[in-house]
Amino acid sequence: MRFSSISFSAAVLLLLTVACSEPAKEKRAAIDNLIPKPSSVKADTGSFQLAANTTLNIDTANLELKKLAGYFNTLIKPATGFELAVKPAANDSTGIDLIIDTTIKKSPEAYTLSINGKKVTIKAGGGAGVFYGIQTIRQLLPDAIEATTKSETNWTIPAATIVDEPSYEYRGSMLDIARHFFGPKDIKRYIDLISFYKMNTLHLHLSDDQGWRIEIKSWPKLTEIGSTTQVGGGKGGFLSQEEYKDLVQYAADRYITIIPEIDMPGHTNAALASYAELNCNDTATKLYSGIEVGFSTLCTNKEVTYKFLDDVIRELAALTPGKYLHIGGDESHATKKEDYIPFMEKVQLLVKKHGKLAIGWDEVANSKLEPNTVAQYWADSANSVMAISKGAKLIMSPARKAYLDMQYDSTSKLGLHWAGYIEVDTAYTWDPANLEPGIKRENIWGVEAPLWTETIVTMDDIEYMVFPRLPGYAEIAWTPTASRSWDEYKVRLGYHGPRMKAMQIDYYPSKKIDWK
Image (cartoon, rainbow, N blue to C red; front, side):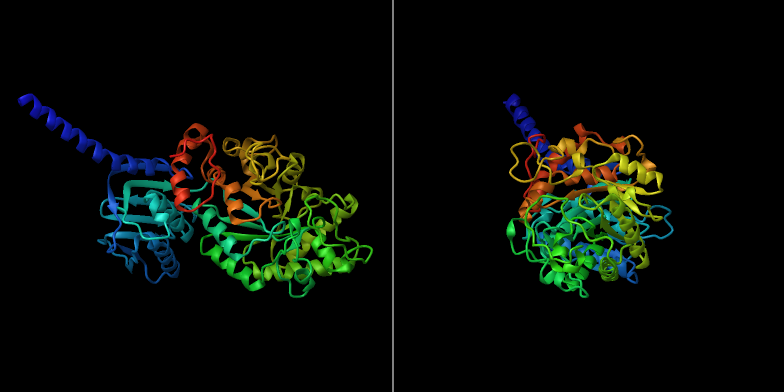
């Protein structure tokens, strides 16, 4: 009987040990599987319990912190039911402290996150850093925090100290709403998704051969005519100026800058169909719903073309508080080189006239570049090296690595593959500063993953092509190359499968990943 008693006690002890170790494993997994990978993570014992009586402690005179506290409550309320009280910060306070300390001599996007049993503290030199600290807390909370309905979950945050800051200043994605139109609801969803992974830029491709998607009041036919189709012949659509301004503010509240693109002098059939005078033969073209490129061009030697562009850039600049406007410049095969070069030089000056700086696809390097013009490398490394020689910084968007519309493999039902297939490992295993000879770290402003929408019709289509590749692009831009490895990253990404399901992301379940 003594033996049986000992065996029973041992069994109970084993069960208790296993039961206690499971939450510990979950907590440790949350700390170990953050994306993007932080600069420094030190796990500690214990955890912080998020509860209905938890307070958000801030400098209540700071309007930015008030907005951030409101944002935090908006995030957690659907799943928890909590509306945390916002109180003035005090040295002996418990709860969650959100602190902006302008004496911190780091990027305003850097932050320190300290978690123990009594308190969670996010400290940063600017609001962006506090915002990114909040995104990290989201990932440390159980996956159910992303649910849209109340969940009876134990809302614990594992104890740790995290020190973090981004590697590249520019971290973004591009959404093409010209080939297929996507409205404010979908764009806001996209903003929320990219901000979760600490991206800070949304490049909106607003015009192309298949559609013009932004209201320009001085040239109303652009939307009356040019917005009325899309690839495949659908009804198209456009953003009103009020809708665009609302999107700009929505993005800014999530520390994302919107960069609008009007592509020119090619990719302009929608404009050419709207106004006959923009064509050299004074005849409006027919609306276009195919996907071939390179056949259209503005008439570059007409004065009215520059009047048109002056008005478009003026109105767009007035709507866009960010520093940059994107002027396209790619695949303008129908424009003679001797016309293309002076055209791009004049357009850069128009952008400058209206108080903005220009970004162009890498072909823009063939022209004289204004100071602070940025070139976006997508296809031609020689163009990009030439841009560097002319003093430009680069955004790295190599099509063979970073184009989100490229198919995962030959079985993919969506997307194209002219630049190759991009599985999740291909998307992750590259270093912007070592991709091409002549392009070094000091030449690079940042990284962008573009999504062209020739085959993309719905928000589910967007999510399927973007996820799970986008977290990898976010990490390439945030985390230093020396701290990244595919073998380690793919494990972390696997833990994000339940999180993406909770976020209702229709992601591609790559066989390269052991999904949890």
